[in-house]
Length: 250
Image (cartoon, rainbow, N blue to C red; front, top):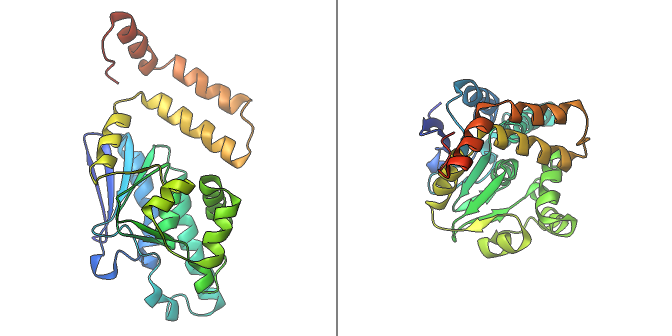
């Protein structure tokens, strides 16, 4: 769909939220498209990293105009929330490293998308807010967990209770973003990550996610990550390059 543009260039997948007339607010159709787009990225096997960005703004959140139509009544609200949750989970569960390149407004559902990413890079003009308390909505538990892991419980409560917007400097200070940088920084970091061993990226992400959700970090599933690494072509190339004192080519 034109409002979500997916490209893959030089092993970097870029998903651009392209609805500038609505400050990149996410419609029900856009939320519903996210799981298939994440599956498409996985299926291509060409991408090593995913960057999610907007146009002028990252995303002003869910399309409030649909609250009186698609989200009207309890059944509509449940269906809409399920689509948002499925889209957010599809990003969070993607096997590749993910970077949110944030500029302008990153509000509500936009912040939910950013929190689903592994790394968040913001420009100085970025503004953040999580606003379910303005709408009588309870923020999804998995998204709340992502927020608490990023900023801690005290700031998570302040953001959710108040619905206030914060600037990029505050977002950096509380841990909501990794860096404040120019617009090109996310692409630079994606290029660096894409040059690293894919087997290491996958294993690291899975272990970190297990720690975040309280899953066991010992046992056959994690042992398989180690085994996959040491039997991989990435490992052979890494060792060969180290011994030859050259840069590895993964």
